[in-house]
Every structure is written in C-alpha cells, then in structure tokens.
Image (cartoon, rainbow, N blue to C red; front, side):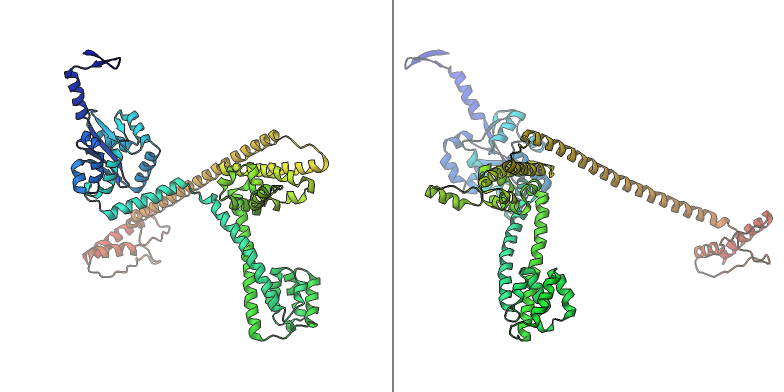
Length: 564
C-alpha cells in the first residue's frame, strides 16, 4: 500500500493484487430478481449484470423483443399458489411489507447458499423485511424496475403452461378479492345504503306531492269540495279511490270514510258535500283512469312509509348515537352530504354546523356580509325551540355534539345508544341554561358516566352472547346423545329379536296340536326364513315338559322345510 497526494489531500492507493480481487468480487456478484404475480412467485437470474447496468437504454429496447430479453434474463424457479385464498393472503402480506413463510422457503430453496449476489425486488418494504430475516443483499433501484417490467410483459414465455387468458383471469380474480379486502366492506354497517335511502325519500316526497296535486286537479272536475275537506295527500288519494262516483255515496259508506280520514266529522262532511256538489258528471272511462292513478299515488305513499322505517333501522345499526342525538332523517342527510360516515367524522364542528349552506357561505364571503349560522342541522328540533338570540349559539353547540357522535359511531366497534342519549341530554340542559340560567353538568362528568354505562352494556351483551352459544352447543350435544341412545336401543332390540327367534316356542292350539303352514320354494334359504317367521311368539303359561316338546317339533319342522 502506497500513499500519494492529490489536490493537497493524501490518498491511499491499493496494491494491484488487492484491487484485482475487489474487482473480481464485483464482477462475480449476480443479480436475482423476485417477481410476485397472481399465479405465484418466480425467481430470475440476470446475466451480465455489470454490462446491463452500464447500458440501461439497450435493456429498455430489448424488453419489447422477447428473444433478446430471454437471453439476458433466465428463470430459476417458480412456485404457484395452491388456492385463491393463499394467493390473497400472500399478496396482502407483501403489500404490508411482511415476509411470509412460503416466500421465505421459496427464496432459501432457489437462491445459492453463498451470499455473493443481490436480490432485486420492486417493493422497498419487502426488501427490508427480506434483508432483516434472511440477511440477503437487496436492491430496488437501477436496472431492477426495467427487468421486472420485462418479466411482467413476457411472463408467459418464461413459465410453461401459463397462457395469456389464464394470466388475465387470475389477475382479475385476485384484484377483485384484494379490493374487497382493502375496502373492508361490512354488510351491517353500510352507510352507502343510508345515502341512497335518504336520496330516494327526498325524491319520493317531491314525486308524491306532484302526483297528489295532479290527482286533485283531475278529480276536482267531478268532486271539487273534497280537496278542501281532506288536505292530506295520502288520505285524498284513498278517498278518491274509494268514492269514485260521488252519487254512489250513501250512509253505508260512512264507516269506511271514517277509517280513511280517521275523523267522523270529516266523513260526515264528505257525505254531505257529495249530495250537494257542484262538480260535473264524468264518464266511466275517465273514472277508471282516475282510480288507477289514485292507486299508484297511494302505493307510492305506502312505499315511502316503508322506506322511512328501513332508513330508521339502518341508522340504528350504522350511526345510533347520531340518530339518537339529532334524529334519523337529519343524521342521514348529514351523512349523505358528507359522502360517508367517515368523511363526516373527519369534519370539524364548524364545518358540520354550516354543512348544506355552502352557497350562502360563499355568497357571504364574496359580499363581505354575515356568514350563515346553520345548514342542515336547522331542521333539528333544538334550533326551532331556541329563541332568536340563541339560535346561533345552540347551532354551534349542537354541531359540536354531532361531530362527537359521528366519531363515536365511526370508530367504535361495539355500538350502543348511550353516548347519543347523554349528548342529547346535554343539548337539552344547554337549552334550559339559555332560558332559565341553570348551570348544566360538566362535560367530563357526563362522558365518564356514559363510558361506564357503555362498558357495562357491552359486557352484559357479551355474556348474553356466550350464554346463547353455550345453550345452542348444549342443545346440539343433548340431541346427539338422545339420538345415539335411540339408535343403540333400536340396535339392541333388533339383535335380541334375531337371537330369540329360533328359540321361541311354536304356537299351540287349544287341542295341543301345533299349526303349521308350509309353502314350497325353490331356494332352501327362503324356506328356512319362512319357517322361522311362521314360528311367531305367542307365549302362554306352559309347563317345562311341553316347552321341550315344542323345541323338538320346531327343529323337525325346520329340517322338513330344508329337505323340501
């Protein structure tokens, strides 16, 4: 080793022998590339690693030609996934940077034991995990991305038995299952159903109002007084469907009208107005069309009620605290306007307060006027009950509680209505404070009390679930034991009958002579079986001497049957 000076600094120069060894090590190091596919793991070795690194543009050009690329890259090993479930499990682990046992065994089997190589991977997290677990030198830069791109393009040329159609099918199937796992879709907590339901409820309200106005105008040609007596759209459609021709109304139809309008005075007014109506006569064909349209409007109104019940049940399962605090309809509108329950939980309370009043907000900013105090939460009962001077304050307080409730519903696994009830009581106390001046309880006390009640309720629900499972298991075990006992008893009875059949005495008539019924058959076995069946047991109290004679007679009968 000699020292030489360069630019005022002292540098060391290695002897030629040492420099040659180091250069030889660099040239001996090989590059292996790991490629993960939906069909399995594959490992490749890259020839002339140093030259490839020096001439990267030539490598990029050779990717388009499979013949040139296969001269540079060679397949070392391929391991297919056993099933779609194992493929999904391995891909999930790879995306999270976790080294699976299958991949570790594959690498240890196909890579050389002497660690004079580099392993190229596409994911740096996975490379760090491999380096930590197996101690291999891993890289993800340089020529590795281009080589992996070429492998992905010409995979069917490397692995025999893989066709383009099968590759596309496996990629599509794994992509769908991976996406479903990433979305983590829960059937019981789908806020998408709430968004669609509240949008449909709003659309149905508009359509029902439009249709009800149309049927009122149409039927008023015949019975104009009915619209003033019955103002509800649903009841008006039922009345129009029931009355049809106004001259057909009599005293007998008064009970049915009372059921529809739920008011005896209104029913009597309808009957009196029908007798003295100034409406025009209408043809039967027009009445049929009016009746059909009225049935459609009534059916839509009934469906709207069913949809409202469905929305209430979905809100109770997805966001029970928000629904308890502000109501199912307003809570569903907040979720729909935010896009999802998660987005609503991310919003601050100031955004929740003016959610739905964006136009007014930007108009106020543009004109430099007062910003809106509330948006969708204006439809809550709390703001309507507050005084004019306190509407802004109560809307800000309510938005704060709505933000808390939405976060609890979004990020809590075991949902209960405890927090929603406590938050609602807090808003009620704040309303009383604005009216009477009574100081409400502190938020820390209320939330600690709610947390204790929530934990108690969750533990009781868990115990009930365990008891139900134990009861179900015990019931199944008891049923299995009973069935096994019954089967054993049946088997015992059958065995006893088979054993006791040849030893039973023959039937003896009153005169002491045995009755025999013989039928000739071709097969001796059939004759024996028939002889045994004919010796049915009808036990009577007989002395021991007679029993021995019966046995002898029975044996003689069996022998005769066999001989025949």
